[in-house]
Amino acid sequence: MHALNKSVVAGAIALLMGVAWGADGPGDAAAVQSGAVHAGHRMDAEVAPAAPPPRIPNSVSGDILTGLPLAEPPVIRSRQGVLKVELTAMATPVRISGKLVNARVYAASAYGQSYPPAFAPPTLVVDPGDNLQVTLNNQLGEPTNLHTHGFFVSPMGNQDNIFVDLPSGSKFLYSYDLPKGISPGSYWYHPHLHPLVEEQVFGGLSGFIYVRGQESFLPQDLQDIKQRFLQLKDFQYDGGNTIPATNIDSNAATHRTVNGLVQPTLALRAGETQLWHLGNLGADIWYTLELSGLSFTVIGEDGNILGRPWTTTQLLMPPAKRFDVLVQARTPGSYSLLTAPMDTGPAGDTYPLALLATLNVTGKVAEPTALPKRLKGFDDLSDAAIAKQRVFVLSENQNTNRFFINHRTFGANRVDATPETGTVEEWVFQNNTDELHPIHFHVNDIQVVSVNGVPQQARSLVDTVPIPYATTDAAGHRTPGEVVIRTRFSRFVGPYVFHCHILAHEDNGMMSIINVTSPGSE
Ligand SMILES: [Cu+2]
Image 1 (cartoon, rainbow, N blue to C red):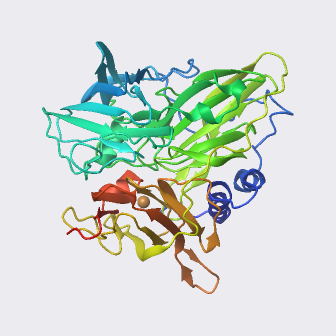
Image 2 (tube, rainbow, N blue to C red; image 1 turned 60 degrees about the vertical axis):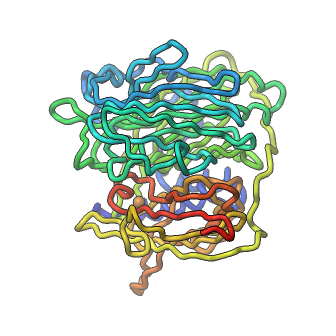
Image 3 (cartoon, helix red, strand yellow; image 1 turned 30 degrees about the vertical axis):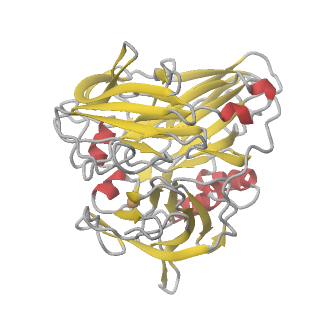
């Protein structure tokens, strides 16, 4: 439990409503909520572009270097419709922003080139319809496997099968057949072997996958837009300079990194537009991104192109969330990419303000290009016939550190639902705990229908959605947080999971298996 700050908690709820799911005028709502959460440090950068970076409450050790130029993780691209790469998971010392720590990370090799083990491993870039072949070489000293987060592929065999259990010292070939219709956007890879997921991702095992094609939805003069992949991950280390693998405290002081660097610098020309692929690729903690009042124009979420872009000055990113955003500035100066103070509920974490990176806008004042108003439609399930409604209640026991869906922890041999292909179901999530839980759905993305009874106008499908925590009114009446989602079980059969993506919660029980069958089959 952590001290309850009512105003901040109220702000966090408002933030969720306004930023993540605002039905109308998300830009305005976000601006208002931004002020509500932490009135005082939000500033209008167009007026005061050279405001000094905020004071950083996290202690930064002397041997961690800050202010380095942002490095981009190497990119490995598919060739003639195939990408072949070997990822070696290993426990090894790596430098994170100059600091040598014992981490658990991927090295890679592809097309005769090798990529050293790194906290920010290579980005795998493919096209819709490609075949992605990943040989996972496990040198971790414990079992692991691989999940391609957000992929619309089969959950069986050697595709996105999180039931693979690869012993240390062995290799496994994954071969993912991407549908031609998979949405361009940001996906990611990470281990998914229960119950070792938190320690392996926290150790550094996560990287981006990018499906090309977002540019085709942008106007002609943005076809050659500069793109950046920004991996948001944090690290802690013990007295032996080792990232902890047990008793990880997501609420402890931590070092937030961008592409494995603490507070790097990056540049943008005044008037230029850049496309940033932002991913919270860490294990447990959240980000509330701001850029000194500059706007993020969101064109993609969780690997989905939006119907229409939306603009906000604040982006809430639970673990696993990806946003593809256009960034532009007209006035030169120094801007701070930061995560604003937030908490995840009375039983959750409290995060202080932290500077993530400094954006230097160079050149002379220049008007940026106009951004598109429309992008692409999506499979809107608002009027779909609902084959079945299911209710999932989230609860937890703080004393035993166990987390439940419908009062049960994960059962590796238990199937909790058997939807049929070709149907749409409506699922009600009721959060009876005192903290947020971001629920992630494998294989089939979902549409958010309502949040705490308020209907939502979806911008796209998503694969991760935060479920608000329970509230108690003055009379002591407790109301669970509630999110209603819909999902279409389009074509892939087989068992897969949905779970909380705070990986400590997943490892401690908050995960459930569903088995999709085709009608008439057993
Ligand atoms: Cu959770």
